[in-house]
Image (cartoon, rainbow, N blue to C red; front, side, top):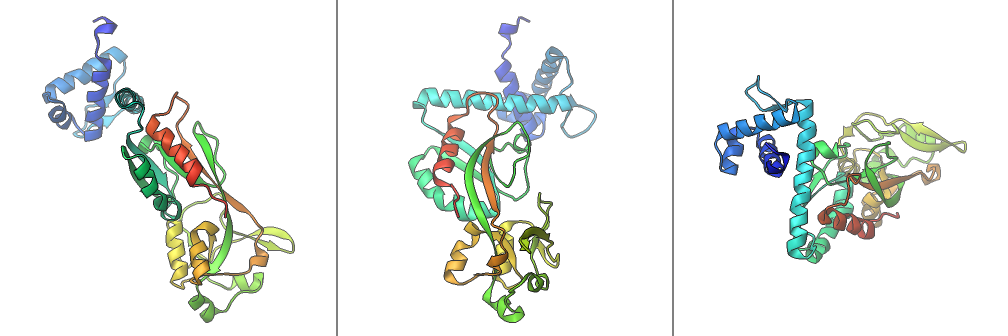
Length: 302
């Protein structure tokens, strides 16, 4: 069959839906085809590409490594086609769904308060917010933009800086009344220092000792999976927490949390970036306007 007579985008669409729905039968129902027609379409696709995309030895649809790579690229191409059609029919009005990954702290204290303004100004835009402090694979999780804190590892992702925040050690008045307010590094070592239960680039609290920065390990008595959980433990009087200042500014202003041992603070800052896949060409307008919004409205300077 001549290459120009092959409906490649149609084949991609059926293949992608089969993967996303987990089987040929589900894809057939959605696409108005029979399961055997979907199976034959995938077989023709494999023959033309010269690779096996799906292992057929299991009951569940299982992609080969080549199938995974083809699915990722096909899904991206189809999204670009959808975006091009929306732009042509709506005068480049940004529309569609943006999947955004952020830590619970950033989502709670920065992103969510800004969403009403975003949705009012861009009513055709929809947003999925995935909250996790863990680093996610943007391609595997189909995330458009991820907000990441700290030093970025070398990768093919593109980054836009969203500013930085200072760090501070805080405790609830109830905890400090019970355990006493630490005044020195030796005091701090005796306190319950709350921590996160996932691997971080710096495992410990940077503090000053005789003018030099050392890493004070957390006490490991209570650990939690995200920064917002850490904040809530501190508010409950469970222990001290070292937090990004923007996450506890309101608590400090109202007296719910109290900064301690500020003279031991080395003044380090945590930098935030919005990262995205931008190496393959022009960004969809829905992603571009979200990045512009974050760069303008979600900047950190605490």
